[in-house]
Image (cartoon, rainbow, N blue to C red; front, side, top):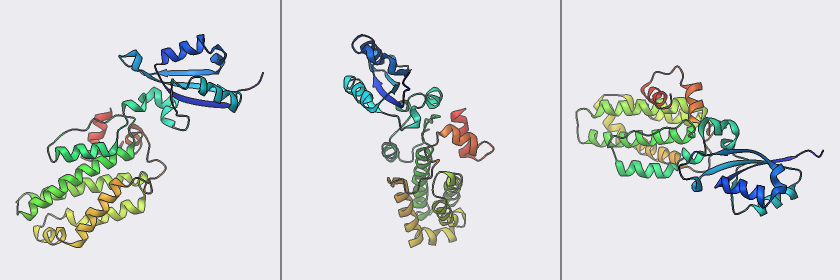
Length: 259
């Protein structure tokens, strides 16, 4: 018996109709079906699913895709988030993935008003870390503005924000380029001082202006130049492996959200 040599996973819509179509209209493709992961959606017609298939040849695969093209949303074979293990743990990426820049815009709209992010286990670690860094930078810049207006508590709150940013950069050395992370970490060191006389010259210096520009570039950089191999690790895996024994407030917050 000829072996199946090609395997593909497809994101499909309305899986009930897809299976019905294969069984009734295209029964010859029944042998090509391997597995089906269905999203639990209240509206059956809007359901998404992942269809695992196998083929003897490239031609057979192309014929299958042509016959069912109205149901196939995308070939997701190369995306590990659609593998069985990830689907069973986290569900479809559509339920937890997010646009980094859409979240940035939301942060900009909200400003410094407090709000809690809703973290999900399958989220991209690099995206989550960038959002947390973006938010901390928002607060830092606000506190620096208060320092320049001579607010009494500004030095202390600036130090807290710098500490948070430093912690995020420290734990992200397995996610972002280590040289870049360590360099950034050093540039924030002057902000840890709670001495107003030391802080004022720094926040009015070219070094501080450069720090802001570097962080803005890094957080919006889209080429992936600073990302390491583990950058797209699901957040749950990152927290369990790298933050398991961490007691810093940000680590506690992430663990509380996921466990």
